Length: 213
Image (cartoon, rainbow, N blue to C red):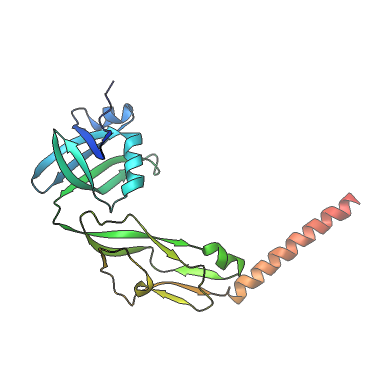
């Protein structure tokens, strides 16, 4: 049985070198990984699966954080992940990339659209063109996602990259005139299909009522 190889101590995550095979590590509910980057040789590591999930939820692939490996501290971020072949919702491997405090990082940050329920209430359709945005930031200024409020958009509103507000220290690399999303009314065909479905549903209910009578 393995000891706990990763834990928080004053905000620093402690990681130990991996010596067992990846398969044996996974059997013990750990996840194998590797660390590499500036001033460090590539080295295999491992962490408890739960701890990795907690870290991924907090930092994603954009934020940097500090780890301690072999009694040395490193600034890293999660550079890559792999999923299990038999379960695409479960991680099987991860890469940590070491950076320095003076480095800048380029990353594709997921866009989360909030307020969509208001559009649905108004029977409007949100069409998204971009789901990720390419940004650059200094170490320590990273973001794991960008929230875009679409609740106040109306028919034929177009949302561009230039309309997205990013935190201080984050610079957008994408073309500011690129289209991100647009709002429109349902097409005539969609509206007809919805009407037909409602009519069919009403007919079925009426049939049930008649049978019951």
